[in-house]
Length: 202
Image (tube, rainbow, N blue to C red):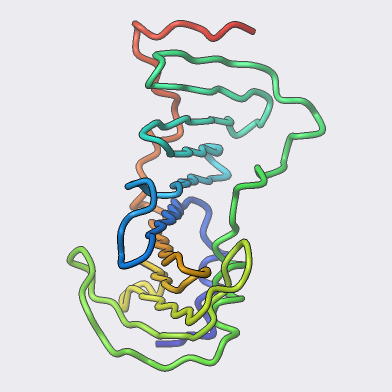
């Protein structure tokens, strides 16, 4: 595996999906509030546009921006509501603050000393992995942090990153999942607004 070339492979790709799930557990492995701290899913394509889903407290809110980046559509399935509004000029061409650039993150991850884990299989895909200590995370360093990066041996593109560690008495787990190019269905960039949804008050 040409590990050093992986960030460059990512930068050359137009369309991808990146999902970050953050799990939080209390003492003795008990779940804090019995739920994930949150999940963020990003779909990005120069051809199809941008989509962001944020999940938490059992709800999902989705935002869609078309390729011309002139409008933003929000869909709230739990309330059967939606809205569409012009995107202010100063926000065009900018990513939301929650967005994490996969290439930039993986460059930081791979800057750590790593050991090779050999081969495994994830969701039917043959992968090869590396493991680092003190992996980069948002919100401060994790104690005893361990990160594992798994890469498709055929495409040399990331499939999954697993991170675990502690923040005080709280166990924290990060799971990052990736899909690239043709593995991303273009239909995900089109807002899904069923006929019984009503517009949000502007």
